[in-house]
Image 1 (cartoon, rainbow, N blue to C red):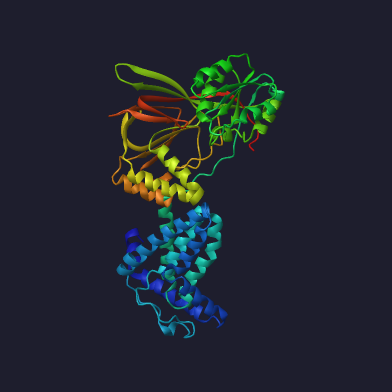
Image 2: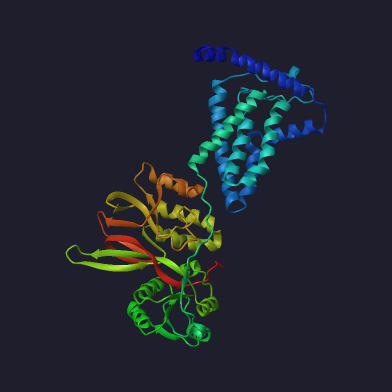
Length: 505
């Protein structure tokens, strides 16, 4: 038999054979004895009507932050697609009569019977779409929902609302909707286990041989700070930098004072300056948690002065990469060149405003909701910046660079598990695409910014950014630098030795 003859046979005899199979299976169901299961499947079928059961499940999951909440959102999204395709498309194109009362016992037959086309089963499509969609984000949730979805699908045959093939077709539509929406919303990569490369550093019991610079403008500085440091490091030499002094010059003096290691108390801007001085003088760096947020200190697991004193006394240290930023700013005829060290991040565009708003709202709303509200406010009122990135023109809302790969892979990077991977983590939110603002606001609202068409994630070991029509404001480790015309970012592999526990705290 040729393939053409087979297709004609399937077209003409296929529906009849499916109908015969349906009647056979319904007869099997009709012979099941009467019992409590009849009421159970009738109530389960009714609970799933118009998606009530699944919306209730989504509401319960949404109370739990993180993956359960994302699972609920993706399940509802898949359900919406499956329901629309089933009811608007297929029920219109494929009219089919539902089972008749004589096919099943009266006590089991659904009343009143739906009047829409029997093919396909909307209940089955919605059940499979929600359970599979949620399960793709959170397998545990999907495993718990799977028997409920299967029960809803079977209930439509048990109560005479659908033929078995209707249920099978509807289930296929639901599965397809979940898989389709997964392309819109890919699975977020898991955060890898932290990894550190041990390095040799001098043992500094009681801070012997340690020079500590203290920036009095640091976020957590108090008059008692110096006393606390003297108690923890009684043999260290402490250099205080008061308001009005040149921070870089004072740190350079401390690094060149004959010390065996350089310690620093201050924000990440101060720490970056100290890191550059430590590399220049071939000294290991001891970071003390003296800033407002202490991003870098958290990355190296220095959470207190006591922890710093312990690792310094033991000589525990790790190797780190450093970012390097070569900046050209000022007038074209008389440019100014600056060489900066990037410990953590750099950004151009509205990213600093986004972070500031998110941190301001986090205490009242929690981090996930604060991120959504901050994103909506920031992108709703902002205008894009015109830049050239590696020679290519873009309109951007955000250009974010992390020294090292950060997680999660979206607009709210939080952790950096590897400190010497040799990479720049590059994230762009562009305004080049049609309806870019609407797309971005939708991505922020649904938590899918990491997979949006206006969000671009990549990694490299270098990047060049140039102003297109006006100078840029570049923020490096939170310190804004206006008037920038060009910035070249590179990574210095294993440039810094920093005191830190070998295992992550």
